[in-house]
Structure formats: structure tokens, C-alpha cells
Image (cartoon, rainbow over all chains, first blue to last red; front, top):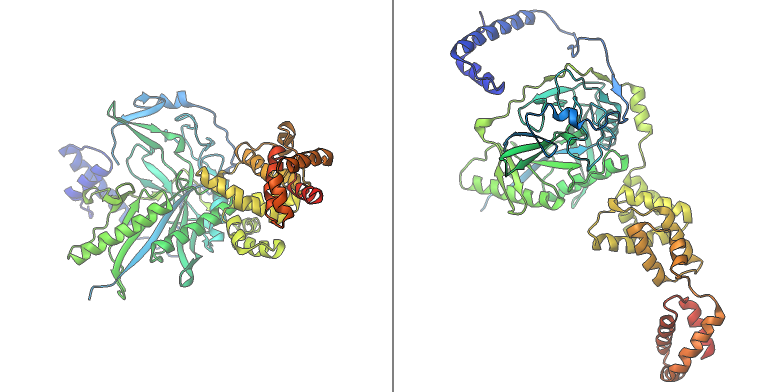
Length: 97
Length: 476
């Protein structure tokens, strides 16, 4: 494997993804990420001069909605997905700015 | 000699667009609904939901970009800005990093040293986040997602401003352009326009920029001006005492007139932007740009020139009348109805401005209709009511948009034009005020004013002062 993922990197990625990894999981993740980066390196060998970056897999563009209200009050259904509810609002653990 | 410093300021301005629906779903953007009444699986980030772009958002963004002399990006797309915070349940905000819709523009501002261009680095489209309310009792945070997915444009300036005055002039200019386009009402207090200030200081003549800080929570022009002064002083003090300015985000506390750091270095932001695979690219054709260009309204500078030419109003009047789109519209619509530009201007400039000030309202909050103001002007013109009554009636129009014709009728406020009745009253007044009559006859012209006043009082203010004057002179 050409790409070696350091302990620091895997720790940092874990923090960003809000994942707590065990020692064993960290080792596995290091291997997986390393091989993913190797694959990207392989792709980088291709000559892509003059090729537009692809931003979407489907050859579709300009899909729009008109500015018309189509949704009604779906509070009850929406709030069913809340971890907790109070006064018609989602209640979540205390969060600071 | 003490070192001379220069302040370098760039702005990130967020503007809430005046669309009826959110940027990616058909939920209403109307203000004041019950918490979460305007939400759906898309704007609460439910897995499997699919965002679809509101076309009006693209049109507003293009219109603002064209007015700010920007290049329109022919192929633009959306990216995800990843962060964990409960105001955004998707855990990413849909924004534009790589291909924003507008780039490389400028607006011109007036400064003490004449006209100056402030560069626009870019304008991009994005979605707003939900509102967090901290519940002290239950020690939890409550979230209302009504604002989640409300369309925003973020206008990023170049670091071209050098003082608080230039910043205010720039914001005023943006506000006017956007209001005239109808793309937003741009109210700082209500958060439909929000400005983050990026500020650094450097020694005069230095080529390199100093380390900048970003300041948030600025919700009035006054707060912005004070925050700029405060942050400038803070950075100069740090440098003077041999310390370094730390690049950080600071929150301005306008009550305490000081700022504090919001995020620490340990919690550095890493947004990991990547193209949003749920949204397809937007291709903007030449024809589309032309169409938006053609639909651009008359902006303030053009309007000012036209008012001067067409209505021959003083510059001072024109400045106030065109200061907001709402005022200009009201003026033009009323003039169209009654054909008396100077009279309409006077009502707006004097009585309207006075009432706005008294009631601490903005011109955008004016609710009366041009029809009712035009009717009032008609009533004064035809001498159906006098000036004093007109002012009273106008207050009613201002507060409740009443129909002045009906109101005058119902409250018996019509000027008494019945010469017989008036003559009778004038005769009574003359009879009961011999001293004033004497004074007048002895050449004291002013004495007639007192008699006019007495007559008006006797008529409960409903007489035509001109006619009273005429009758008095005749009978004396």
C-alpha cells in the first residue's frame, strides 16, 4: 500500500465524523482508507487534460421547482422524527454557540 | 512618533430572499408561523428526501449579480458544507463553493473623497438554518426548523473598505439595489440582511494584510460602526503591546460594546466541501441572462434623475423619496392617481416622516394605500376640508388606512362652505370682541389673526380659513 494513514489522521477523521473507534476498528479503517487513496492515485494516472470535471452522474441539468407553496402543516409527522419534543419543537441536548 | 494604522475591511453579507417557498422544497417562508409548521422531510434533513431547486432563487441571485456588475457563471452547482450542529439536521448546509453563481463584480459608493468602487468577490446561493432556543428549565435546546431551507444569497466583498463609513455606505448601496429588485426587504433588525465583518489592521504603507478576525452578530448599522471601531482599537492595542492578532471568529455584544472569541483553535472548522449529488448543475444561457437583464427595474440613481426632470422636486425631497423602494412606489402610485407631485411629496416628507419617527417605524412599514392619500389630497384641493382637519385625517390614514372621504363624511369634518352660516358666526365674533375690532380698525393688522382663530374655534375647526379671512375683512 502506497498510502499510509497515520494514527493522527484516523483520530481526526473520527472526530469529524463523530465516531468513536476501538483500537481494532482504527487499524481496519487505516487500511481501508489507505487502499481507497491508492485507487485514487491509480485514477490520477489518467490524462484528463481538457476533460470537464463531472459534477453529476446523470446527464441532467436545470431541474427546477416553481415558487409555489405545495406543503401544508406537517408538524405532527415531522416531529415524530424528533429525538424529543417540547412546545412543538425538537428537543436536543443542550448546545452552545 | 506613534505608528499610523490603516483598517482593512471586507464583508460577508447574507440576504434572505423574498421567495414564497424555501430553496429546495415547497414549504412556505411566511414569517410568524407556529414552530415547525413550515417543515417537511426535505428541510428537516430526512434520509431519502430529495431537494429540488426553486427557480426564483436563481433569478433573484442573477438579478442581484447583474445589478452589482458581476459575471454570471454559466454552469454553476451546489456543494455540501459539512458541520454538526442541531440548527441543521442534515449535518451539512447546501451552499456553493466551487462554482458560485456570480463573480467579479463591484458597486460604487459615495465617500468623503468622492466615488469609490467596492469589489464583489462572489455571490452564492445557500440555505438558512433553523432557530435554536435554549431552555434553561430543562437544560436542553429546542429547535424550530421553519427557517431551515429559507433561501439566502451570500455576497462576499473584496477587502476594499477602509472605515466604518465606507462599510455603511456599501451596505446601504446593497440594500437599495436588493430592495429595488424586490429580492428581499433587507431588514437588519429582523435578520433578513446580516453582515459579518472581516477586519484587519496594518501600518500605513504596508503591502501585506494583517491577520484578520471575523465578527458576527451585528444587527444594526450602529452596531456595525461600533464593532468596527472596537475591533480596530483592540487589534492596534495588541500590536502595540507586541502581541499577535489571532485569526478567529468573534461575537459582538452591542450592550457591552465589546467582542469575544466564539470558537477556539482546538475546534478548528473543517467543512469538507464536496459537490451535492442530489442537485443537478444549473446551466444559465445567454437568453436567460438577457431576460433577467430586461426585467431589471429602474434603480435609485436613475429614479433620482427622473424625479428631478419629471417632477422638478428639490434634491432633498428626492433623496428621501427614493431612499426606500416602498416610499418611491407609494410616491409614484399616488402621483399617478392625483397628478400633484409636490403635494404628495409634502405629505410623505413632512407628516409621514414625522409619524414614522414618533412610532419608531421604518419606511418599509408604511401600510396606507396610495388611493387614500390621493383622496385626502383631493379633499384639501377641493377645499372640502382645511389643513388642520387634513392632518388629523392623515393620522387616521397612517394608522388604519381609512377612506378619508368616508371618514370626513361620518365624522362631520367637512369645511362649512355655507356662507350664510359662516357670516353669522363671524358677525357674532365681531360683536363679542370689540377690543380686537378696535385694534384692527386702528391699523393693528395682527388683530385679525385673533378673530380668525376665534371664528375657527366657534366653527370647531371646520371653516375654510381663507373664507373666514375674507368675510372678516368685508365686515370690519
